[in-house]
Amino acid sequence: MKKIKKSKNSYHHHDLRNACIERGVEIIAKTGYESLSLRSLAKDLGVSHGAPYKHFKNKNDLLAAILEKSFSIFSEHLQSGYVEGLTEAKSLQLPKKDKMIYSFKRLAFAYYRFAFEYPNHYRFMFGEAKSEHDIKSKVQDTMQNTFYYLIRIIENMQQEGLIINMNSSKLGLFVWSSIHGYTMLKLNNIDEVDEFSFARGDHMLELVADLIYQGIKYKF
Figure 1: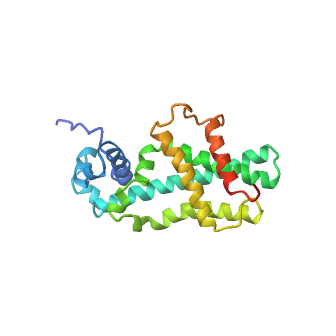
Figure 2: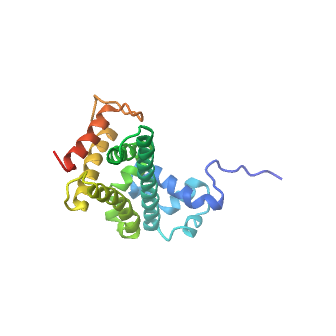
Figure 3: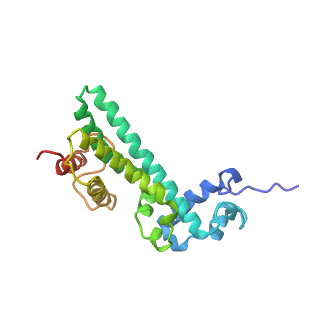
């Protein structure tokens, strides 16, 4: 009996949902979300045409799942970055208020690292697909929770008198848009001076993080 060669792209059914999400991200990065379909995805992964439909109702549902996964990973990066900042600040024996400032700046590094570790996810998260396919409403809670995490940090710093006492959501939007702008410039290779580095020696990112804090601190 002739042995059937298993496709290198085939996946066990327990992993198919995540496989569809990850492969979907790759396809979107290469040819755009318009070219993505559950049928072509099934063929690409070496499964039956109907297999992806066991996990996703339609293409729109898949796009929502990709966005959900992307923001979940993003949120984990931000939270880990802040906690790592607190740990580093503690090892440096910084005063309480300085610890908060130090950890706040580490959020910028966490944001930046996520964009370069997951560039395809990052571009999709802030692209046009989610609005055109009306998938934003399906993952609104995950997206808002990510933003609210930043807001809570800002409000805690306001209580300590470290940040100006104004609307925390507006301050959060300022912080987010500032680091997002710098990150997108780097991701698109606009900057020819400062080369990307995960190391703490990334002086330009350190400056950006410091300037963001200087823009919202209590006393100028």
